[in-house]
Image: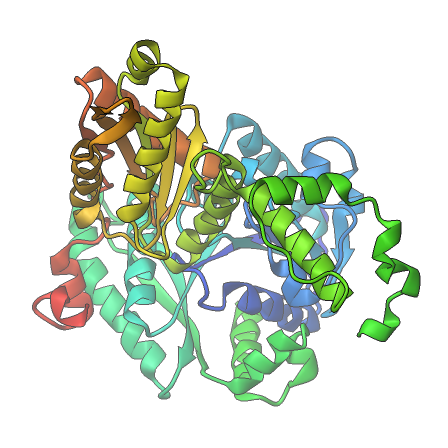
Length: 264
Length: 241
């Protein structure tokens, strides 16, 4: 339903982050992009995990040119944008670029410039950030209009998600943070976890925010994704869940999250 | 699998292995019988060379190359799993004095003895390496920040307590200065940065008088016990750990 092609329009930039690694962030970004593409959106997934990219592994891509080549001036930005199987585009960082794990002013500027150049050409840009909260991750998030935190019901993941939310609220002044709960075993668990996070944020984070009219932080649950063996199967086949097992519960959950996002 | 290999590849006689075999022999590496299982023999030669290129010849510890490889994989593991890990840089105090007073052979004996002492302090999952000169390095995965100082102190006292025979009925003791840094669980650090941070602490230990262990103070946790308590609906988070 989206024919966003007005001249001067810019992509909505959404950072997908998690705090803890291994909660399905890259799996989610790739499948969300494919689902949004089905709504007619021009979507780009930018692998902002500059230190260690694995979007290429999830999508079974073997890029010859990556963001690293653009950063070092060896290639044009256009050459590094690849078509992905799900009808969206990807820009891969290239693996093992450890030097980018330190946020130098140069890396900072280059990221800003690249995102500025990409924004007019897409309807939506997803920034798939790295695990943890490094300064590179925080910087990438700061370039996004919106941020989505993905968590699982595991205590470590919830704690890390909470720490991420806290940092984003205090350091970046974020007042709305989107939440997706992955690997849910009971329907409604996502809502419970969101409520619990909201409770702690209200008690411990909001009182320390600059007062005024916006000392409230709201956590918007975008949806929950059930634990589903289909996810593992798709990952092992290095394919998009939406392509290989579109009828699986997890695929349907991602599609419905994308549907709400595209309609908003 | 084997029948796919070009038969000429298995013709070991055509390979020039003299240099490799000499190196292995010199290091005391035993090889299986060459004639009975040629492929296994060649594999053993390669394995032996890999082993040689990751070891420090004097102390038998991992060398700097092996240490850096291990550290790089540890950096990634820590960032993803959020496990605390500690890097220690260990330097023998006034090593030059041993060399000057007793000669380089005594110096070598001291390096070996310190290597042995350090090996006695570690768990199987830890890595101890000779970093260069009289400097050693350790990677301790899954080491909780609250234990770091205790571990470093144990290493320091263990080395200091050891009498090292240097020939001619003489015995010396040496002390070490230790600097340590934890991989910040939240930050994907680089291997280089991690060693740099541990090195800064080593410098601190040296400038504060040597024979001591200085660890970087771990970052204050972003999430307090009260916050965790409320998050999980328990009074103390300890119940969950």
